Image 1 (tube, protein in one colour):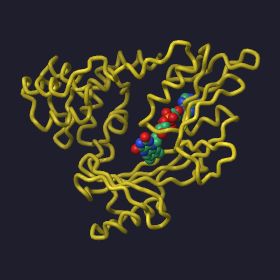
Image 2 (cartoon, rainbow, N blue to C red):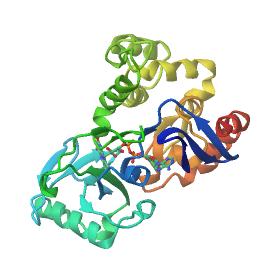
Image 3 (cartoon, rainbow, N blue to C red):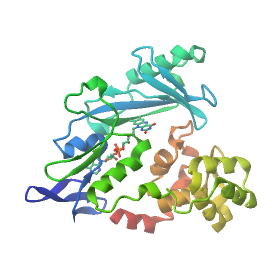
Image 4 (cartoon, rainbow, N blue to C red):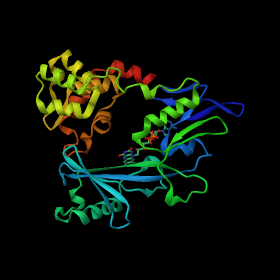
Length: 314
Ligand SMILES: Cc1cc2nc3c(=O)[nH]c(=O)nc-3n(C[C@H](O)[C@H](O)[C@H](O)COP(=O)(O)OP(=O)(O)OC[C@H]3O[C@@H](n4cnc5c(N)ncnc54)[C@H](O)[C@@H]3O)c2cc1C
C-alpha cells in the first residue's frame, strides 16, 4: 500500500504497487492491519516497536516447555522443544531502527544464552551452539496516561478522524477475536466467527485416524499430520488419495510429504521456495536449512507457474 485515496477529509481507498505495477482500489472501509508499521499510516496512533528474538539450539529439554525469569532483569523467557531442536526466546527490547531491517545482534544472543545457561549450566551454551535465529518487531500500543513499563499486550481497535480503521497489538492467539471486532465495527450483520469452525468440514480425530489407517500411512506420518493440521488433516489426505507420489516424504531429514507442499501452494499462497521453508514450515531454521530439498521444492512450485502468475496479478 503506497498511499490513500481521499474523498474530502475521508479515506476512500488505497494506492498500491505489486509485482505487475501500480493500481488503485476504492473501498467503503480501509483497515490498517500493518502491526508495527501502523503508525506510518496513521499519525494519530502511538506505536512503540519492540524487538523480539528467538534462538534455535540443539534440543535442551525434551518434552517440556520451560517458562523462566531472566536473571539479568527478571523478564520471562521460554525454552521450548521445537521441531527436534529447542527454541529460546524471546527478547523484548525497544527498537528504534528501520522496521524492515530488524535483525539478531550479538547482544541479543548473549542475553538469551546467559539467561538459559543460568538454569541449564551443564549444556555450556555458547554462540556457536546457535543453529539459527530470527527477529521480528511487535507493535506496542501506547495509551494515554499509561506508563511504558505497564503497557499491556492488549489489542487496540481505533477509528481515525479520516475513517481509517486501525487494528493492532494483541497476539496470534487472539487473531479471530481481533478480526471479529473489526468486522463487527464495519458491518451491520454480526461476524460469524464464533459459530464458524476453522475448517468447513469438521472431522473428528477418530475419523481422521481411521482414514489414515485405511490408507496404511506410517504411524509417525499420522502423528505429524494430526499435530500440524488438526481438523484440517483430511484436506491433506484427500491430496494423498489423488496420487501415491503425494504421500512420499519430500526429504528424509524432515517429516513433510509432497501433499503438504501441494496444499500450501494451492491454499496458503506459497509462491516462492522461502514461503515454504521459512513461513509454512520451519525447515530454514534447522541445521540443513532446506538445502537438500531446495531444488525439488522449487520445481514443484514452478509446476504451478500459471496459477502463481494469476495470484500475483490479483
Ligand atoms: C520473535 C517474536 C515471537 C513472537 N511469538 C509469539 C507467540 O509465540 N505467540 C503470539 O501470540 N504472538 C507472538 N508474537 C507476536 C506476533 O508476532 C504478533 O502479535 C503478530 O504478528 C501481529 O500480527 P499483525 O498482523 O497485527 O502484524 P504483523 O504480523 O507485523 O503484520 C503486519 C504486516 O503488514 C505489512 N505492511 C506494513 N506496511 C505495509 C504497507 N504499506 N502495505 C502493505 N503491507 C504492509 C508488513 O509487511 C507485515 O507483513 C511474536 C513476535 C515476535 C517478534
